[in-house]
Length: 332
Image (tube, rainbow, N blue to C red; front, side, top):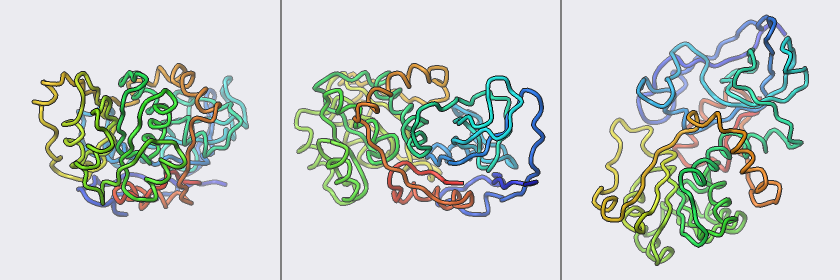
């Protein structure tokens, strides 16, 4: 093979659904692998809501934007097919930021070997960004205590579903907010959440009062939307809000108004945003924390797999529609 396929970002999205014209599908020559480098064949590529932020021109964010004309940023898992690096050998499985492309040439920086005897789908769904984000946000930001009540928005998504299971395993009362009855049934019947709210059909105020009569101690926020203020209004003194994502606002030129600061003040609520690039140096300790839950069968997952690199473009819109069923990824 002398060439491979990649997808470059060539325009900034202007809000609303992602369209084909903001990307360019290109054929690139196979790279020459120099001393100290490896060539990775990417097998699965992750699609994440954070990508909407990475495509924007905002230079005041937690990570620089993807430059126009560059390969679109993403994490993935693959296999080393050529190595001139002392720490990697042909056949090693590796995980890291490899972008929207079939092959990735690297000096090894930022790539982690995958030794667990688990399928690529499982590794990308649990031990990659979703599991790391859930672990960091719940334990290190939220600092949960047994017996507390936590509510998780985007609870059927790749991060939210793991947050809820970890919280339940540690003795919390767990409420999930989802966008369909199928997702509500899944997180309750399969994942063990105590209850679920379908935000599209429920009377949100009535359901929150019914399901959290003693108030809410922790709020793991993935979505924004009208329920956000209603949750904060019902939080207990010294509650904690972990702001992980705001998918409902990513396509808007002007984000929706947030909760009243009066309630934050009166109830001494801690609100903390977090992003994983700040914590990449802590990945070994996060995996050490997460792995026992997985090995003990306390964390289940499901993967939503699209086929072929080009499916990633339209696949991003599944996040806006709420149609992704678990961890969204592309099989190359």
